[in-house]
Image (tube, rainbow, N blue to C red; front, side):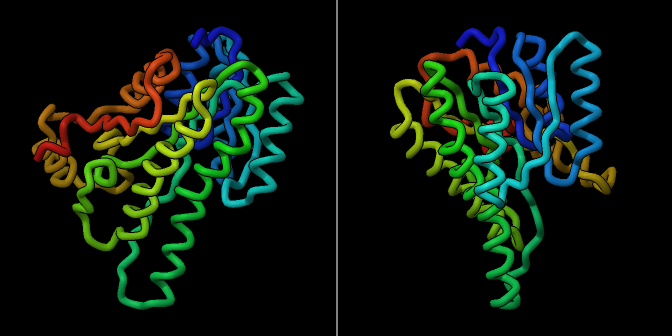
Length: 247
């Protein structure tokens, strides 16, 4: 796909989202960043893109609400006359000990709505506009543990399963939406250290990663660009984890 003047909807404007937005903007895409809580971060990214000569807009959208997803898709098309790209980087990641049935059920619902269900609904909201424009690209975010079939960490079952479900969303919708819309996922590994990580924990991740480093948000942007520009990859979940899954 030639990215010049394409309209790209990016969910999750913080950190990885900002890097992806900048990479697509530099390729000539017009950027729409949507947010639920991180309004300031999204607006800061938009201002930076505009200062660099790009075209960008920030909009609110709660991805757990189907009506908001559909309304946002229509709003983008009204503003830009097209919707060509969806990069869905928004997700939640919460520790969920399975000690209480009621709490476990709540964590399950929360993670599935925010991660897997939103991926499915976003795809269905965007795909008709992409087909009308002649084609499109959809990229979701999974996780290296789910993509590798290795739960790895205790107390994260709802998160792990919701990310594993994204692989199913990608594979099924890649078949349903072919040949005009290509649907893939990226499964990040140690990309950015979470807030509050100790120096020992930071080093332990490096020691457990064959490429011996944290990746950085730019590595996700590179993977997204590949999945935008390829015309022959669909239904894939691509690990970007520095080989972490090999240990």
